[in-house]
Length: 232
Ligand SMILES: O=C(CO)[C@H](O)[C@H](O)COP(=O)(O)O
Image 1 (spheres, rainbow, N blue to C red):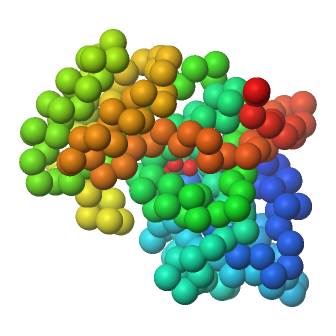
Image 2: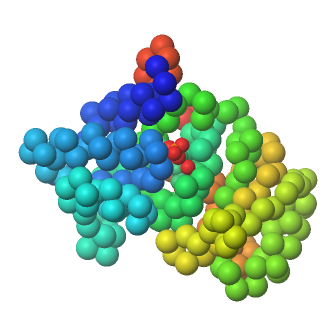
Image 3: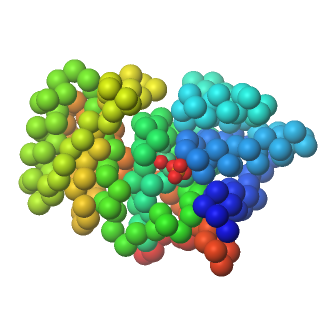
């Protein structure tokens, strides 16, 4: 089974959690896009749902395929969010934001009664941090914010390259008009402490550690699809 097929299998399993009448958060990324494609087929067959997209990119795909959309202003409480992830630890702590949508993804997940992550098994790790942590920052004061991130990380014994994400020759700009710093800290033993330290920096808008949000992960691998629950 190739990588795309694994994403489709995880997305198909997640579709089984979608019930008629649900208000759905819809994630961003290649796995979430497979979910949108399968969801659109069900909508075409008569499934009634309303979706809140986590990015302009997802919104465009939903619109193209006929998935009805709302906003968190019109629909502030969601039943379920289905989204991908860049890394998943045994407690279902996540790193997200590889696609640059982490802020909206976190707002949408937090507005949902339940978040289910869909991924292939390559995303499973023992400890988060192999994937560089995306940190969304305000463009104002970028240098100072970067230095503050370095200092906060150093206090937790973390160090590594902080790279401003670029598209061609210009900084990548998120849907919210912010920049992203990708932080290559390596293993992050205390994700909660890092999350709190980053939130305390004024120029940090949000970061890609999703802690305590995912209730289940649907993981596809060559041998089949399994549902992972948070380790206690
Ligand atoms: O967080 C994300 C976007 O901001 C994505 O969910 C994450 O990058 C996974 O993407 P993919 O399914 O393409 O591997």
